[in-house]
Length: 105
Image (cartoon, rainbow, N blue to C red):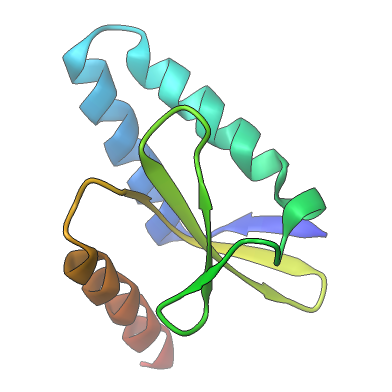
């Protein structure tokens, strides 16, 4: 299966990188490496993660409090968001719903 990281998720990765890099130099790079390793595992584990908000599977990062929200269609895994799990679940829901509306426009 092919993993496709959508633009919104790439921005999330960038935001996460800078959040951790601003905490301590080098931690942003560690965050990015870990999440990219997590994404590489998706072809082996796609669809085993619980479904959230009606359609998104959520894989939790192994070392950071981030969730990867993805869908599977045919032979493609689409990563829609990589979000900090410490935020209010309602804001995560809103973010994912905005992503859905954006695609329909």
